[in-house]
Structure formats: structure tokens, C-alpha cells
View 1 (cartoon, rainbow, N blue to C red):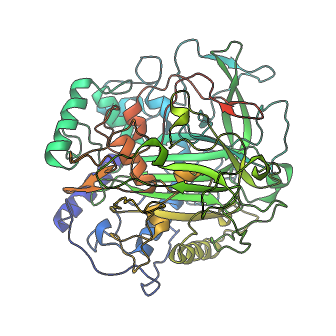
View 2: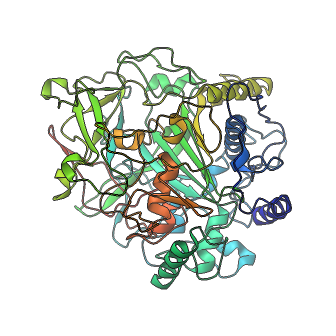
View 3: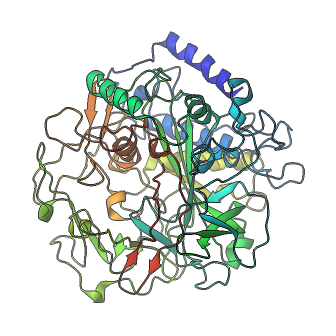
Length: 609
């Protein structure tokens, strides 16, 4: 059913001529653009295109993109159809008219939400060198997509339930990531500091999921473990020759179907006041702890709260995917526990500095060259970001209070001395985000919350009034590094449109998913070891290309381009990192901490969206 709906949309878009839009649209997405209303009634299906009647994503206004993101959020958080393990259950909304958005806790509607029934990354990419759980040959069965959750990692990795945990059927929420793409660990100071059941109660953990469309594509091609080298080489050749991604589902090349959706979500343990507040979507989760040996893990199940949700979708007018990210309204707090932003995203308690201690990003990367490590992308803790003078121990964030904070992971030698390595010898507290939520997003958030209240949602009936859109990316843009004294951050001040985004949109980042300085201000490449030189001129920062143009894109799109569309060491995954990475060997467990540093537990590290 999902595939049929996408195919119908593709026909409509083809008629509209949206296969490869490239014309510049001068309409500026500013406050003068008309508001776009958010609709809830009968909007249980995910929208499959942005601005389909006006030229697609390249010609959409910022408010249209924000409304599209909210319609995705509403549909994906609709109560899911009751799960019986038969064809058509997963990914599908409840058919009972009473079981609509916000009624997922009602007795008749209880269970997972639509996105929660998508397959976790290990369900599509198991680490045991076998086909996915429930796999059946043939498209008629959707290759067994609808089987109940089974998480198959490499043999001998998972011991089973941890001590004191009873054996239970696997919950829909499988938190097998503990860090932000291996760069740092994220903590919530508002959570109590000790627990017999959770070795790191403050730690925010993550999952990645993808929908039926991606699973069918992977299963049809047999790419659940690794993309064959012949396909990898053929795709790289196509990318460098044609300067664009192949048409969807081209035989022998990597290019996912339109309608492919991936989500990444952050979850954490809640304190007692948060549990009773009604401001958090709660669900049973599975998380992992150290097992009986140094190379095994065990699992525990508990009711936790949702603190962030990424949604990315490939559409016909946006083959580079549209990226939308949402947060729980209270993620950023003052030391005494007050929320820095309101539910719509307006900063109501400005904290003066972005982080404690301050962090300085020195992006000295001349166009077409690769600077020496001493001047390349240096990130240091400092009390004075103007001079980039390093901080001493006295400036570390020793008392987070109820703030969120992070601790960067110490890279293994010899990378620990490279300039892209962030400071790892202390906690860094987050006081506010690097780029504030744009006014147009705040406005659309207010419209979404108004639509919820008109639909009958109250703070006592559902938590969704306490979730907000942070930003959305829907077209790539090129930023050229230069050799200015402190680098060349993207600072365009408008008027904004699809091809000229605001800095907040260029550097799209979620405060609890991409938190440290490198991720909040990401553009170019992730490290010197990941080449993204599409055009062969020595500029390794072109991470994304579309319709014959190379882009040094920032934020989520740039990161996915750098990792998922890369001609470098990883197989190209068509902007999907989980497709590029393949089989998931083991769940991640909390890092080993000392007072001086964080070290990674030795294990396979799978990146995600």
C-alpha cells in the first residue's frame, strides 16, 4: 500500500516536471510570506512531497517546508494499526476513527506509534551475516517486513537480559546507540545521578529506524550485510561521471526509492516529576549494559521519555532528502531547572554564553587546499572566544545542575592530536543553542500547537503541545571556506529562500542529537580521513551534489552527504548512513568514564541519521 501511494505521487510530479528542478526562485521566505496552516483531521498518512503544486522543494518557502515537517510529525506520531505480525501492520496508522493523533494512550488505541513500528536498523541490517529476521523471498510478502521486532546482532554479543531483568518480548524502541556519531556523549543533569538498574541514568541514548520502502529496497537487493564492491564501484563511477545520484532503484547502482524515510530518536530516563508532568511521550524501551564478559552486552527494558526526533524523507523534488528535527520543549534548562525556550521555540531566558566553558571553532580551511593540523578546524574550550585562548581547569563545567551537558570522546591515537579533535578532558554545559530557532519556525510551531488545541489535545490528554520543530533543510547550499583569521562561518542574513537559507537552517542541528561544537556548526567533511572531493580540484569539502552542482553543505544534509553519498572509503548509501554502513555488529553501551577523559569501549561503531 505504501509503495502504491508513492508511485501515484511520482506520476503526478513527473507531469509537473519535477524530476530535476533547477531554476532559481527569487521568492524570499521571510515573515511576509503567508502562513501555512497545519491540519490534523484525516492527515494520518505521511505527505510524500513538499510544495507539489508550486514546483517542489527547490521553489518552496520556508514556512511551507516547516508545515511539511509538522505534517510528517503528526502522521508518524499517529497511533499505529494493531500489530499482529501480518502483511500491512507496520508503518500503518490505526483505522479506528477514534484512534487519531494524540489518542495513543486510549485503551482502544494503546500501543506503538506509526514511526515506532518501523524497523530498527539492526532489523534491516543484522550483524549475524544472515538475512533480516522474518525475511521471506518475494515482493508479495514485503520480504517479511511485518514480523514482530527481533534484534539480531553478531553471535555471542548479547547475553540476554541483565541480572534482575525478566525475559520479555522485544519492545519497539531499541536504543542501541549511546553517543552522537561517536563524537560525544550527551547527559541530562535533571535526572537523578544513581540507579541500580541503569549505569548511566543521565545518559541520552538513541535509535535509528527506517520504513517499509527502504527495507523492501534492501531486501530485494540482498544488501542487509554489505553492499557488494561491484555495486559500490559502479555507483561511484556513476556519481563522478554524471555529477548526480542515479535514478531511483537503478539496477546495479545505489539509489533508494522515493518515499524512503529514516528516523533517529533520542530517549532518556525521566525523573519522577517529569513522569507525572504529561510533557513527555513515554514508551517502553530496550537499552544495553555491559554483559558477563568484556565483549558482551545484556539488555534491560524500562519506560523512558522521548526528547528528540529526526525525520528524513527522499521525495521526487528532493532526492537529497528533506531533513526535519524536533525536540521536547524542556531540553535546554538553566542550572536551577527552568526552561530556556518556550514550547514554540522563543528564547525566554537567555544565558549569555552558548556553553560553559565557551568553545571556539577555528575553521581555517582555504578553498582548494588542506591546511596543516595546527590550523585546521581547531576546537578548544576557552573563556574568551574572541581570542581563542585555551581554558584552564577552572573553566570546566564542574556543576551542571539541571542543564544538559556533553563530554567529548577521546579519539584513539594518532587522531587524538588532530585539530578536528574537540576538548575531551571536562564536561561542557549547554546554556543555549548556537543558532536560535528562526522566527518563521516559531510561527509555524505556534500554528501547529493551535491546531492541536483546536483538535482537542490538551496538556492533560497528550504530550505533543510540549514538542517543537527546531528547523528543516530542503535544498543544498554551497559555503566556500576561506583563510580569514577565524575561518569562514556561514553568515548570510537574508532575504532567505530555498537556495539561500539562514545560518540556523544551513547548520541544522538538534540540541540533544548534534550537540558539540563540530556538530552544531558542521559543514564540509567530518575528518581528514573522509574525502569528499567530487570535482577533483583538491577541495575535500564538497560533501553533497545535486543536479550537476557540488555543495559544501552544512548540518544534517551535509553530514549525510559526507557519509552517505561519499566516494571515499565507505560504500555510497544515497544519503543513508545506515545503508552505507550495513550490518550492525553490537549494541553500544555507556562509555567508560574517568575524571580526566572518556574512552570508547571497544566495539563496532555504526553511524546513523
